[in-house]
Length: 159
Image 1: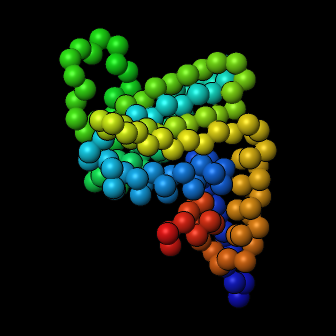
Image 2: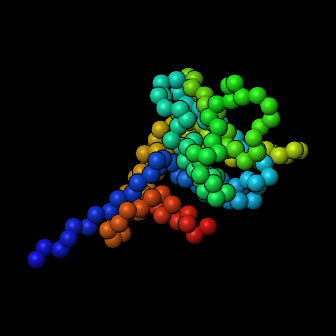
Image 3: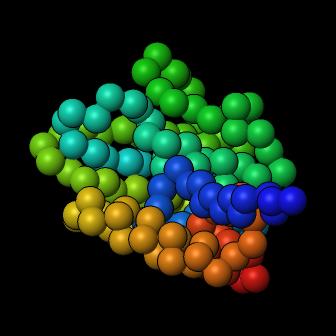
């Protein structure tokens, strides 16, 4: 009898090590500051990128919303055009920039009266993503069958 094949798969919306560390930091920041601050996600990419907001920006919003026990689809604001009046409390705003040859920049802002925390990741080379994928593949080589993500690869669940 032939043993079942070993299938190891690592799936990630973004293989950048820095982006995945940032997502973990956002969870922690949201738990401490999220209910008391205005939250905005600002992302920038090259002029040829077709989706907006980017998958990474949405992952940031999901990480923050999850930490606050919210559903992103219920609290996300993707455009402020035509909105009048004060900001609605508890929302997560998104702003998108498409310009030049920007590889990828993502910032989450937790803004309160008198202080603001910004957590930013900037990719200056697409090699960042390839390096993370290679790191993931090397990590997978010693594992049993399973579906993993970059939180597993980087041991972020233990933080």
